Amino acid sequence: MKKNQKSCITRLKKIEGQVRGLQKMIEEDAYCVDIITQTSAVRSALKSLENVMLESHLQSCVIGQVKSGQEDKAVSEILKVYKLKR
Amino acid sequence: MKKNQKSCITRLKKIEGQVRGLQKMIEEDAYCVDIITQTSAVRSALKSLENVMLESHLQSCVIGQVKSGQEDKAVSEILKVYKLKR
Amino acid sequence: MKKNQKSCITRLKKIEGQVRGLQKMIEEDAYCVDIITQTSAVRSALKSLENVMLESHLQSCVIGQVKSGQEDKAVSEILKVYKLKR
Amino acid sequence: MKKNQKSCITRLKKIEGQVRGLQKMIEEDAYCVDIITQTSAVRSALKSLENVMLESHLQSCVIGQVKSGQEDKAVSEILKVYKLKR
Image (cartoon, rainbow over all chains, first blue to last red; front, side, top):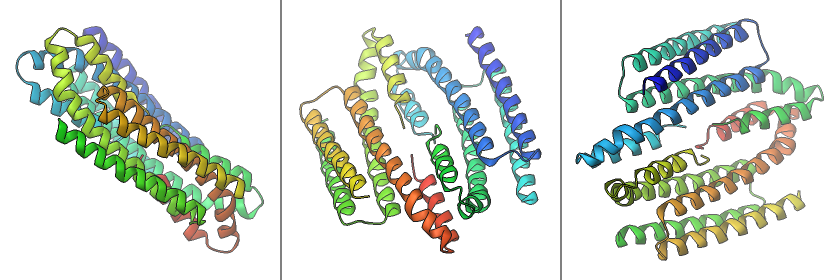
């Protein structure tokens, strides 16, 4: 879990750098299509991070919840995550 | 255009803050579902920015391209943006 | 479950009608933007159906799987569904 | 254009068949994950059709609109299509 945490923070630091790169692109009047391509890449990086978080959530929290009688909480939270804007 | 640029940078600074907030959430072992909800909010903020960028691209670059005979470039770039991972 | 099944079939019959409506729109040379708006509506209807199916999958199959030691199958299938093209 | 129209109708007839296939899967109590995988495939087929429609819209209607002074209509409709639920 700790290893997973570290890897998530590394990903987020990279994403933070990409967001600062986007600010620079706009300041330097980069071509709109290149900026949109780059914001879309940042969204993909966030989506990958979400996949990792969800996998770890399912493997740890959800299984524990189902085994301890908290099925309703487990199910409604997975559905919530599934319906989040994509 | 300059005004638009300034507003995009303000949005990106806010997004940068949100990404740092996510790092803190992970360091402090926040609940996975709350983290995923927050990364999804950051993706929505990036998507809104893309809508603004695309609108400005269509209103300025694309119309200029079509009027100066660069229709093919204009069309293929709009399709490229449209197909970017969502 | 039977009631759920019936409601899913009703939804699919409506979707089938919408798909036939789209064929008619194209034959009658409807405006492209109107056709795209309508195909998008059909995709939303399919997405809603998927939400219903997923909810029922989580409430029945997944909980049974976790309780009978098939956690790995349960987790990998939820991730598979989550990553399906949206 | 006529050739394009014919190919779109062929795609829609295939999609209609897939939707009927889904009804059968539900009637025969297929596994939920298989049904969701299949509805997702139908949504992808609809999305591909939208890409074709949008390309033809940009190449014909939009260029004509921009050249005849209807830029505002052209831009707002492309944005509308871009923001449609995905």
